[in-house]
Amino acid sequence: MLVVVGIAFVVIAVAAGVMSWRLYQQARSVKEYESRAVSSLSSLSSVVKADGISQSEFSKLEEKISSAQMNTRKAKAITHGRLWDFAAVLPLVGDDIATVQGMTDVVSDVAENVVPRLADVIHTLQNSTLSAGDATINLSPILASQKEMSSISVALNRQTEKYDNLATPRLTPIKTAYLSGQSSLSSVKDSVTSLADGFRILPEFLGAQGARTYAVMAMTTSEARSSGGLIGSVGEMHTNKGAISIGDFRSNKDYLSYKGGTPTSDESRLFTAWGPLKMSFDIRDSAVYPDTARVAEAMKGIWKNTPWGTQEDLDGVILVDPVVLQQLIAATGNVTLPDGRVLTGSNTAEFLLNTVYIDYPVAQQDQLFELVAERTLSSAFSDMTVSKLMTIGTIMGSMAQGRHMSVFVFDSAIQKAVAAAGFTASSPDSEKNPSVGVYITQQSPSKMDWYVHRTSTVVRLSCNTDGSQTYQVTYRMKNTLSSDKVADLPSYITGSTRSGNAVEKTLVYPPSGGSIRDLTIDGDATSPKNTTLNGKKVYASVITIPPGGEATISFTAVTSVKSVTDLRMDQTPMGWVDQGITYDMSVCTVEKRS
Image (cartoon, rainbow, N blue to C red; front, top):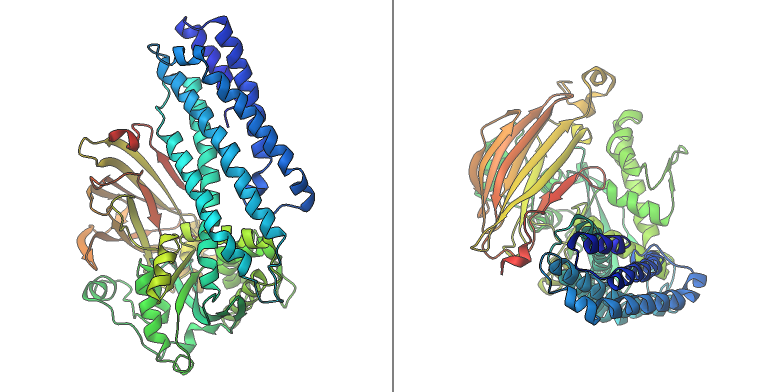
């Protein structure tokens, strides 16, 4: 994490002209100690990232942790000696020296107090029996570890916050080291947070307090709806004290005659009265709402009108897309289709979102999705081990962050925990932790959204004296299908007009308690409507992107005066793990505003 810190110290010594030869020698020692410590901690990445760890690796864990602790103690002792304390008050270089002191403090605490506790939890779980049968999980060890996992996550978040609050170094080498360490620490924090969140809700989700029935709503993101995509099929998941069964997936055709939730006046106006595609609000369009709570309400209304729904109450809904299935397949093993085609952890999403529409007749497409979903979900929760448990927990957390998965439970007490753990997607609703939302609904019945790649940049312009922040947001959509390939594709993908156009109804939400100004669209688009959706301000437009074409939405976003974190982008998921959002927060640091 701080491999280049020693080199940076040398630059400081030469540039400032006030550092002694002794300080130079100590800086070299700090570099070596921190390098060894980081190397030891990096070797524990299989624990932190929940990729699984063997018994033989566990036997070496204590040695690696001891090595990291010894080296961080030595580095900390040097950087808090008299010479360094003196250098920390000197002009020009003092702030940078103080930052390095703070950096060694944080790394030391992670080595001394965080990683060992995480290893202990995993070791305890590994020595427990988690599988109580092929499709039953022993929940007792998980319940026993919840409190400690949560505490570890809180401690790591606290250290990350402490690191982020250090003064950003002015000298380039130190700044580079600082930003590199910040990135590494943030990555570990995100992984542990996802894991802790998974442990937090998994027992309730798996019926620790009694039987639960969930509707598993499969979203086809190649035909986008705000929350993900058109609902192609709905399965059932039954859980009871760790016992799990996956019921048959029914095609959306089995649900079409059963109407359900009643749209609000805003929803009717935006999605039905205003086209070009007028939402029917049947099962296919129930994910058109950007808030999972509204999707769940609609599903519950539909469910209770079905013959099977009259026999069994619905306890919640789970929205999943093919990216979730792909991640689970990567963790639990490949799925072989009846014709011998093998789906893996790298090709499943593309197959279910694009290839299946090219290579298979329409009559088989839903059947194949149902087969893959049933096998994948059944495999994910069978023959549970600690490695598998941690992997599933981490997958759930990361997929929820990207909106590839979202959960809503009708029991208000359980739902509160589910939402707090970040498993329920919603349009921007936090003033303290601001986000902007961009949600897409395909307006041409097609599977064109597989070809629409979306990227965005979020650049902080200022931290304002009233506590708000100002950002420039740029959101780009590119239709990657070339015009000469349109004729090669079936109309089921390109749309009945066979134009290959992607026609996107786009909703842009300002930060909660904040605002958007100067919104412009570069491309073929209707003028943005400044309107509301269920009490929240929204800017709505229809954007048409021809094959090979692009469109860009640009605007300035101002957060609430209550904001305490950096602005984040929330959006309709694509057919892959999104890496297209770029954040530039270099202008100022939010925590320094107080």
